[in-house]
Amino acid sequence: MELANIEKLLDAYFEGETSLTEEALLRDYFTSGNVAPHLQGYIPMFEGFSEAKEERLEKEITILQPKKNTSFRSWSIAASVVVLLGISSFWYFNNNAKGLTAEQEEALMAYNEAKQTMLLLSESLNKGASKVSYIDEFIQNTATINIINQFNETKNKILK
Image (cartoon, rainbow, N blue to C red):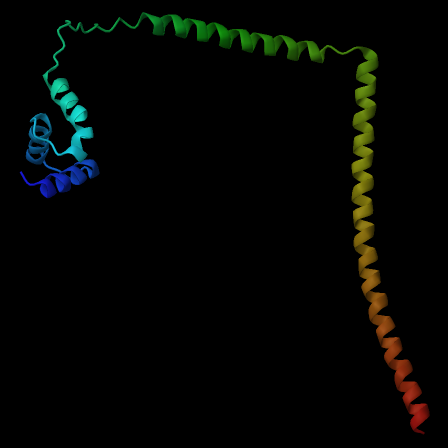
């Protein structure tokens, strides 16, 4: 086979663009004893491919049968126990938080009353702020009218 053709096939082989028959031609060329000196570095690779092709597994392969799903049952029981434990601990600690002393209940009532008072105060301040903005607009408009009137009066005095 021509050396140029072998080099083209070799380039195509490394690009993954060869067919099976072209690969067989390359394998035959490199396993024959007549290889160009600058291509002799590829001989071990193609010999290894030929040897790997001949290898057979002599060990018997056993396929394991899947076990029955007994672990699912144990996991589901464990998950149920964890959920029950979580719910019971939440219930226990939530109920104990409600068992306040008289002093704590009094402080809680004072806090709630102060909160309500602050909300009422906030509402009153918001109403007052809206009124102030209305008054501010009114003052600005009247100030503008006063300035225009003063300008007209001064203009009339000067023009007379």
